[in-house]
Image 1 (cartoon, rainbow, N blue to C red):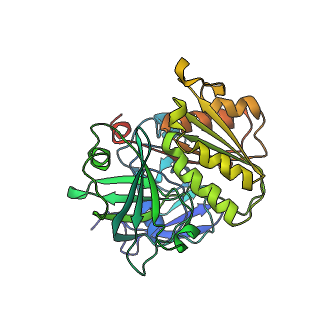
Image 2: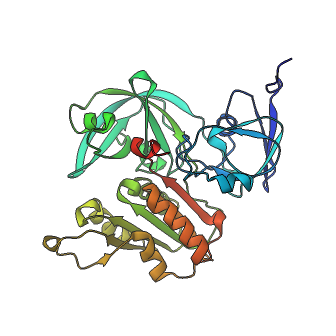
Length: 353
């Protein structure tokens, strides 16, 4: 007799929304949720970032390989699981307050053509991708796609433009790629990649998008190219005439890392509800930097010590996102379910145990 899942699979219920779906024995809970259009939160899908962590209220799961910084032993004892690497062994009830009713767009594989390459700074390249004719990519502003490279290797990048912009002919999907020397994909982007090159992508993925059913003021937190999905959110809010107060804190090591500073200042002129606070951590004298310094996530706390009435959308390096979640929830009263994040895990991050 087989000890795996019954043919019909196991029932997964998510509280408090009551959303229900079926997971088969050979798939992770997250893969089953994505397949059935259930908006569980997630980021890397590799057990490295912790974005998919939620509380197991009942049932039994088998948790696969993951990093301790994403799910600690203590959290595991307290009933937390990572849905990206957990398989159901019985019917399961999870608690995730971020599960949304938003219609999940179908995840599709498609060929794309490199339409344009534009260097935004010494180590950031904007890539524009042309979609197949008659097959627009449907996505929420803030989501990401994966490139499928030779050997099935994948690399994830967030869309840096909002979906409505694709209606303008020739716009294409915009991505911001930071050069990681020695990185298989980014070395190619900054080296041999040419316009008209054909690549394969799959998407959209991710639960990082604006919750439009709220009227709370918004803090946007970005480090480095974590600005890409934040830019898409700002474009989307302008397009939808969303007038909630928004303040963006964008952090970089040097001023040049804030590679679309001019774009933001132009955007503020047309969006009176948008404020922008650039923060630089490692300025040198020749930068002549007179703005805010230090860690970008701490600049938020200096200005808004009480975040209890806010929503926060954070994107960038895992250390920034993790520190922000811990400090905003622990020190500034932000409700945990109002912190939405997309941690940009690199291959090096995933190698850390």
